[in-house]
Image (cartoon, rainbow, N blue to C red; front, side, top):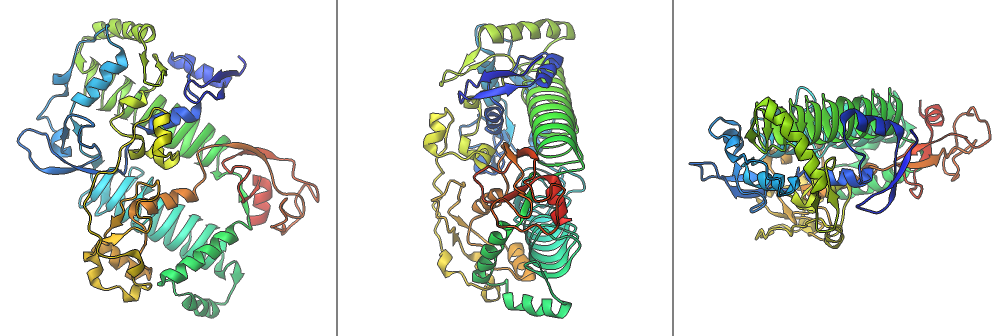
Length: 595
């Protein structure tokens, strides 16, 4: 079978379905998609709210407490606190309804999602943790999101999110594993005492590192391997290094801002590997480790025969999924853990043969169900016999095709399409879609996505950003009583909270690490870290090594490459857009320069 070109019914752009995709669709008996890969990814993201939290009354019988919840008032009918929701004190089957062949499937499923009580937040085995969502195995953390599922868990991690695993005493970090006493570190592992770093591996006692491995006592460095006592890639003696570092005084906000600017300019003068792909074969995407046969995948470990996956590990034969973990034969999902043969589902834990489910655990052979646990042969939360279930499901699929759901923009959803965005309990700007594919309110509404205005908070700011002490040594203990203005003052598209507080543990961390107070609220700081990472897109490009130097003339090669003084003939798929200023090398040229 040859590749087939199609027009996305959402963005109207052309996209290609490859022969191996058709093989996968045939294997799981679904039709080809009608949305392009990027639009499909955004559509899934609209169903995942990680960081936008509200206060809302618990609706469990006999409970009156106010909960922190990811669901705003009116988004769904009832929320229960997590302990009650997981208990046997209520039965999700009580909300079950017989299938109505006079109504579209998605309309009935949307009504069920709104009717069935939901947990206020998602988190397990995380004692002493406050203000969180989608976490596990994380002790005494604060404002931690989407983390802790990768092993032993986290301890004392603050203001962090997006795959923080096995880490301790870390603040403002993202996509890290096994880091300790780290601050503003992204895409790194096995590090300690690092301040500002990206793609740092096996380093300690350093600051402002980019693409460095097995280094210690280094400052403002790029592309180093197995080095000590370097400042801006220049070697120093141990004594000289200590003297120069003392002059820099990172406890000052003015000083650290100046260093950041210098370091970021320096990063642009060194070659960047076209993609962060390590110990993998036949891969396109970025930040992929120990995987094979993965196409257009981002942030993945131990993947096999997959495509269009994001933030996924130890999974195979999976497509179009966000957060797949230890799962196989998955298509169109979000948060699919320890599951097999899952299609078009959101949060499936230890599931099998589950279709169009929403937050289910240990369920097998279910279709269009919400909040079920340990159930089989259910449709719209109604119990059936195995025989009746197997007769009814094909009839529902047939009806989904003959009576499809059509949204307000005229987009048609038959069997094989993921949940329509307009049925999501979350607005576009509440979800991770806004993080990875930011839109203005006008743009979101034009695309048919909902938007939520910030709730009035009646915050009285007691400390202006301009009035904060420049140096951490001048910060009084009373700063923890202040309500501090965010420097963005709500003028950004970064879910700005306009104000923030410094907690006691946070202040102690800044003093221990000799770091100045932040000037942005936690949400805006989160977005600044996201901006360090490349987009979830790929461009076809050629290596920028022109022989003796980079094609823009900025970087002189240190050794002669195999292609001599001629331009490198290699090309690749990369997440560096052609108009970006970074120097992008193929793996061969890059390895000759940095290893």
